[in-house]
Image 1 (cartoon, rainbow, N blue to C red):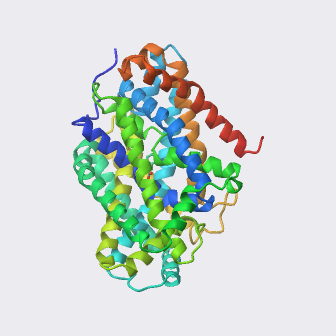
Image 2 (cartoon, protein in one colour):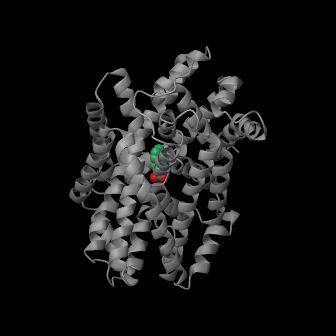
Image 3 (cartoon, rainbow, N blue to C red):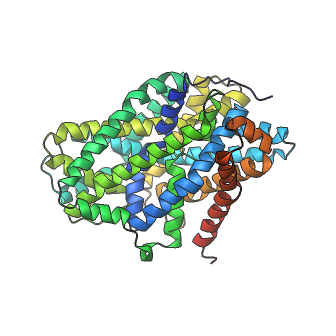
Length: 452
Ligand code: PHE
């Protein structure tokens, strides 16, 4: 019979789970990654494909991940092992958990470096560095910052320590309290930034960039990136949401919670886009500036608006927290596994996992400067890890989760775990998870490698 609690602890309420899962989903993916990827792939058509991916692939897979996690009540590796055994299937399904652990290491290593940028920008905003500075000065300052390995290393290290501290204490205690206040605050500030963007006279240009699809700009790689962005932003395909589901009590409605989490995540990404692109166009900048986009654009607004010093400081601070709550969920699956299988204490497990990620992160930050010559497939480590995880490994993990939840796990088990009956909602989920999601991911993969 399925366990009703996890040895690692439980969320104190349904709201706590929603906050934690939203904390995982909302992060740099929404505010840093979404705008620059949308900018690179031409805007509207990318955004449309992104939204379709969230609805048709993301939501059913998120439901599946929470459902599997809650049924297994362990780290993703052991959850998959236990569920595969229950169904009398091959134990190789645990490899899905391992794939997630590898993903977690790779994502967190570069995620922490970018989170370090946001921390540095809290200090810069507070010091009034952006005040009256024009776009060129701000861009040059960013480029100079990224070229300095020592500063990147310092911030990356501080951020990883912060992540390890929370994970070592146990996810439920620190996280719940923090997220309850921070998520609404971030939201309010983003809305205010969109309000500022409306005063730039280029709001309409921003709107049409984001929402008027120009399909001639959409390549196979653009579609792959939109799908990858959906997985990345919703924290899917690597076990983060699965492990958060394992701490959820048995009564909570998985379907309803998933729609709320995915809806909030999407809203934050769109708001970020609406805040950034009008400023981009007002300044005559190009939307395809790559990973520096947010750091080169938002400071211009903070430098010009009244109260921008305070506003910018609080904004970057909230971004640090958003990144923090996501990073925690990236580390948690491997820590849970270390605790379960090596019987390490939580503290040791967190430090061990954190140090490994830290080391990998050093390679990422060096790839921006000292090691910029070292490339694999034309990408430095940071860009490589980003591309490989979001566009390939997460969708692959999601595909396998869909196949497992839709084809391997018995129908009775998923009906029982969702506890929403076998009406329209369940049948729709089953259709999406068995056919739509796996086939869509497969087609996008094939399309991207130009088989068609
Ligand atoms: N969803 C997070 C973000 O948008 C990143 C993340 C990816 C977190 C995968 C956990 C797992 O920033």
